[in-house]
Length: 269
Image (cartoon, rainbow, N blue to C red):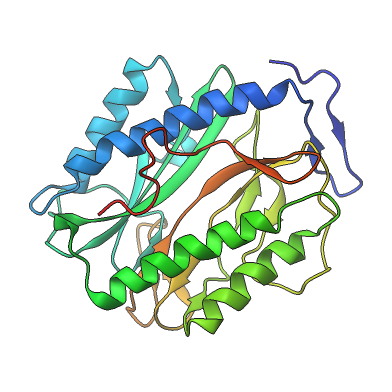
C-alpha cells in the first residue's frame, strides 16, 4: 500500500499516488469476479438470502473481508435490490420470480483497499420490454458518466451527462443517493451526484478514486426508506435499476477498477 505521499485538494478530496492504482484494481477485480460468479445462481425460486450466503463464502475463501458486514450494524456481504427497490435491499427468504430485475452490490476489502461495484440481473433471463430498456439505459448512463470523468472536467459534468441521457429516454435519476470517494476508506469525499449542471462542482484531478453508481427509475425519482431503516424504494412503485463502477482518474481519463473479468458486467441475461 503506497499512500504516504497522498495529498488533499481544497475540497477535501484525497489524491492517490500512481502506485495505489494496483491495490484498487486487485480489490475491484475480486468484487467484479464475485458478481460474475453469482450470475448463474440468480434464478426463479432462489432466495436473496441464499445468494448472499454464497457471496459471503466467496469473499472469505478469497482471504478478503466484506466492507458491509458490521457497517452501521448491517449483517450481510451484499445489498440485493429487487424490482422497485432502489438500493440497500436486505437479503431475505423471499424467493425470486421469473422476470424480476435484481441489483446486487458488493464491496470487499483486499489489503486495505475497497472494491465496490454493482450490476443488474434478471431472474430467468427474460426481462419485460420496459425492464430491459430501463437496464440498458441505466448501464449506458453510467458509461456516459465515466466518459465525462477526466482531468479538467468537473463532477457536475459527470452528473449532467447521466441526467440528460436518462431524461432524454423519459426516465428519471434518483436524487436521494449518490456515488462517493473511496480507496483506503469505504466512503469519503466527494459526493458524486448523478444529476447536475455542467461546469459546476470540484474539478477532477489525476489520483481521485470514487464510485459512479446511477439509480434510474421508470417513473418519478422520489424514494422512501422502509421501516428497516435500510431499504430504499421508489415512491410510485416504478421499477428501478442501478449499475456501479469504482474508477480512478488518470492523466487523460478514467481507469475502471471493477471491470468484469468474464465480460459479464452488462448484459447479465
